[in-house]
Image (cartoon, rainbow, N blue to C red; front, top):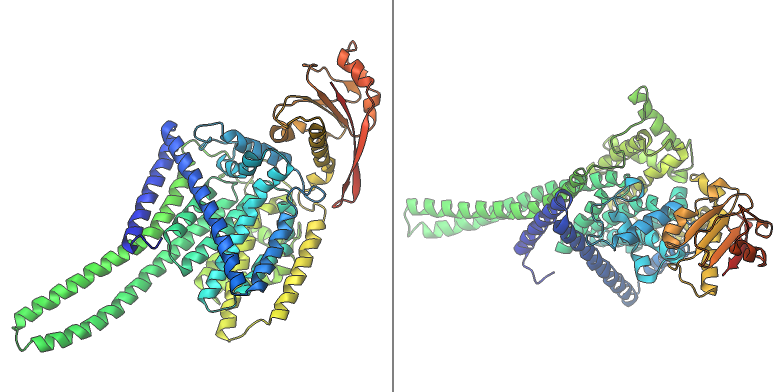
Length: 613
């Protein structure tokens, strides 16, 4: 915003952070009008930056075409298309019953004047993150595609902003921008990223927000802009109200903002000292010329006034430039502390009982770096371990040591915190996904400094080979069955049932929000949670879970009834008591059967159905 003077920008930002922080506290403490104001300011800010994101994305594509930077733009486009191809693609991706409840809560937010801004939803997690995830469904209706898009766009936007941030940083160092593709494509080599992305659930939100923060911070290092400061503060504040693992990213972001603040003070002081030295030399020459006409006392007074003005200017400059980063950090901290006013429900301070903490530390780190429970670091394990050891030993820069210590802390806390139940070790590892983009960025920047120091470059054909290998690794990882979240191995048919019900409604010219009876027969207890799915997909349906081959007691037989079973029992149902009209009609209706091919697991799911009016 070039039309706003530099000094005024700092003042505007400081006022914004003060108002934002006060509104957040009042929203939790007093609610009512303050909650409404805070909610809509928060949402409109999100929409503003969403539009800005689309504008700058289009502008970057235009500039790449104009400047003929086809390799970098097409390379990233291929990566985005790959991730986007799994949205709504249930041959590979999953329909998560937890995600259905989360998105349903997000949609329900729009029925509140304050968007349920300070409320809680799924398992007591803050509702705010689900409001964002529900926007595609709000705009385009409930469906598999919009459910996936709600969580998938979190990831794709975060990845894109990180890519732009890396490009800006490389451009500022006079290095080739296509190098930014390397850390982005590296994500494909981490099985937990590909597996949990295909889950399309809140577990992918922390890593998405972490990438978003990385991209914004890198751009901030290159160019301080009022919009960047607000965007990075908004991102950090959303971290405070999202799935618990991202709180670790929030803490790291605050540390790096304060580190930038300290470096900015040092740089400003150095610049002012250099300027003062130059001014003093000029003043001395002027004073020598004037000494012939003025007395010694007048000269002393002139020097004193000059020094006072310089000191005041220096203090004012440092104050304005350092207040803004402090405002960002304090804004995020206030948002986090405000969540404790009603009390957090994510068991943030509950830990597993264990013997020696020291022993637990080394056990957690050993399991993490050796992939003892599941392949997490994979081919990057040795590189990451070397980076962590050398960083802590002081071989690299301060920020590398901070990243490495933070990674070790995250790994231990992820393993040590209880969560909601006794998860398997492999499942717990998903909490560590936030370290992946941070590590990739840290290692990448360290490697770029190495190349610049020795004036080395990576040939394009070598980079092309590396990216191709990573892309193939990603395709392999996307095609693998669940190795961490094994629960989904056993409920694969459910996503095909959701698709079948949607098709049935379309064929009968019904909307997913219409009222109807939905009866599901299955002996698999893990597939008897249609209630969870229906909260998002069929919110007004009356759901019945059929037991064995007994026809359920339907409360409203006037509604159209859709019946489904994973075998042929629909033709041999028996009444629970006296045969009802609906039962007689159901038994006089021929059943239909459809097969749905599951490419990821290489099987065909068969579902039988009947429609009774």
